[in-house]
Length: 290
Image (cartoon, rainbow, N blue to C red; front, side, top):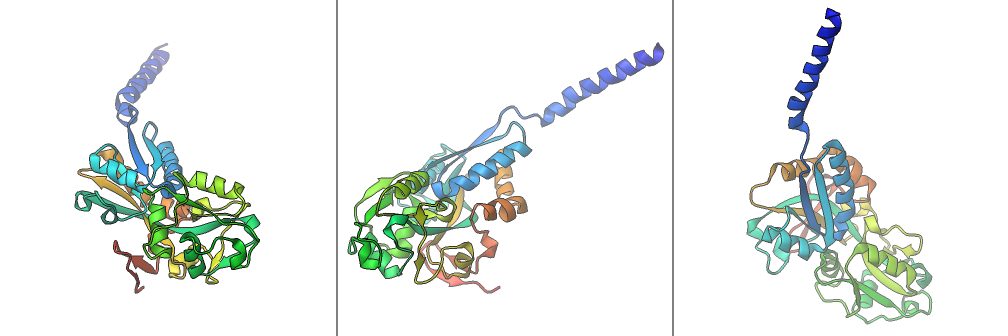
């Protein structure tokens, strides 16, 4: 009987210890919000889910809206992280010196064409002329006799600004229909005869879309890293002021081998350490010595 009583008290003591001691490890529902680039959204949603699984009760809320939205909201202190395809210095109205840049990966951007246009390769000059409105039918570049339907991202999109910088030499695309998200671009181009737009590699895989060769160079991660593929940008996670504990931990997680070598590569992004070229806020590109 004494043994049973003693065992009972041991179990009770252990339970009380866990309630009091383990409570330090049980989160009360903390969360941070990351807003902005839709090109980065897929990676952050995946990484955020894995982070929450490893840290029960801690949540990463990921929203799109475009790079301009991410930069303005983090500048205002409305969110903990502003996601951007652009350097903060490239966006008007943003005080870049008040923000801290955390580059998490590189994203390749590719033109995407509705498969019925029957075009599998073009030149950079042809691509430029298509978006400037100088070429208006796919037969002019060896495709079907089908009018070209342009689709752009909204003006606050970092993907659009990167595309116009890399392809149009900073000129503005011909006025056309616009979409706010990468998902809607993919859906619209795949279902619209003659349509063309541009997407991050991570969104471009679709049986109804063609990712054309440009000047005989394929849009893939290897060619981005080597500098052969010219249309790419860094993915930035901007913060402002002193980081709270959860934001700091999530940024550390984004830089961890688990994310960089697994999640990043699996989803079609490129780890920064794989890059053989680098780009600055003015758009200048130089090869790295490795």
